[in-house]
Length: 488
Ligand code: ADP
Ligand code: MG
Ligand code: ZN
Image (cartoon, rainbow, N blue to C red; front, side, top):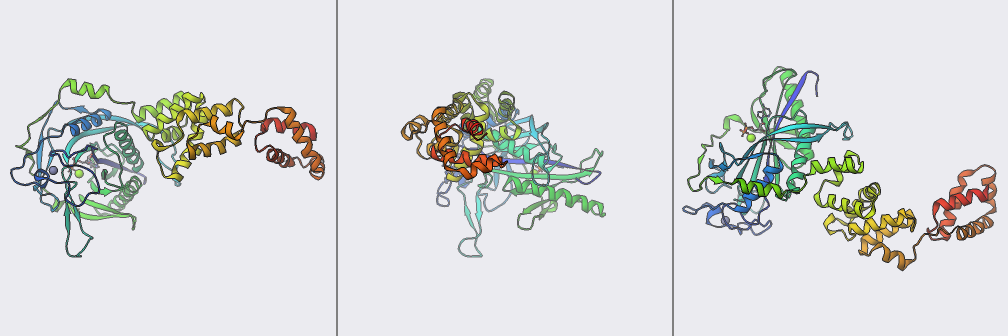
């Protein structure tokens, strides 16, 4: 940030709720169907077709609101937001306006600035306000680039998909705070299983409102809205670009106009989409076809008691309980299933550090290479735990374990099975190790001489030889000790 300036950022996030049918009709929400296959008179906006609210959508919205510490209004109102656009057949979108589903929440998030290389500098806990989260329907999609270049197409499969719009207070002071917040939202929504959080597919869409002001100033500056950024990293870059642009503009005597801008990743900059002059007056009014949405205390209670431990709480618990770093705990809690897996391995192995190491290095790498998620991993948490126990009690060496792990990953066999079948049990019998060492020393007089005349790094050569003969099964500590004694 430039000296003497402060950035102010507020975020509007649209989360697609993962219901099986649309919000006001029974049409499927399945992705990838023929254009306009998932439609009916209601979502096509035909006259006289009546919307009926989907209970599942309200339940999803309720879980999300509770997970974000929002207050759920016992009565909320659906309103028509009127505007004309080809992908909006009714001429209005059903949304909520002055009586939203939920409002007034505060969330506590670990956040950090990043250095030039993108590494976190210092993690701090900060509170951010969420103004409201309301329920609305999605619009359809205009498709411009198929067939005739002068024709556009409209696909209404998405029209009527339930969304939760989550509006934050203008509480973020840097692009990385915004980044950490959206990441937090995404993980939280995934944990409570209401949204898959996929930004690339548009299931989580983010608009950033950015303004700057002189440090110490009370009044907020004029804001610019950046729309439709489809990845977290681009969002962060777009905000940074925008902060700089605004400061330079003001310092060179210009002023900021309230407008909507888009991010170009190719050019690494934002550009004007429309200025406020074309801004819509949406003429909101309560939808006469839909009664107020009422929810009971019991309903809220029931949802609340069904919530799982949330990611931020879990990250902090894991850090404390198992002495993990922020980064390790973040990765392990990035997905609920992965965190469950980790805790399963800890229970089975009794070794939290080793469990974290194996998952963070070997397991995540293999999953990435196989392009599968943790839910499809063939090594069960119990088996990985059992493997760690085999290392810890000296049955197998660390080197054997690496090969064992690869085989477990590929075949799903248990560690005991493979160790037994392949005879991988580590040789801890010092008599046998001594015998191999004596042979090795006898077979390599030159190296023995070298070692004795001071080239002690040759110890590695001898360890290697012994390991080769024993198929990697000799206990390395014993090998080292005996070798040093014998080479003396
Ligand atoms: P609209 O619906 O027209 O976009 P809102 O008043 O609902 O307007 O604000 C939308 C978002 O803009 C909110 O997240 C809010 O925190 C943020 N915001 C409002 N004023 C500013 C400002 N001056 N600078 C940065 N963000 C702002
Ligand atoms: Mg807005
Ligand atoms: Zn429909």
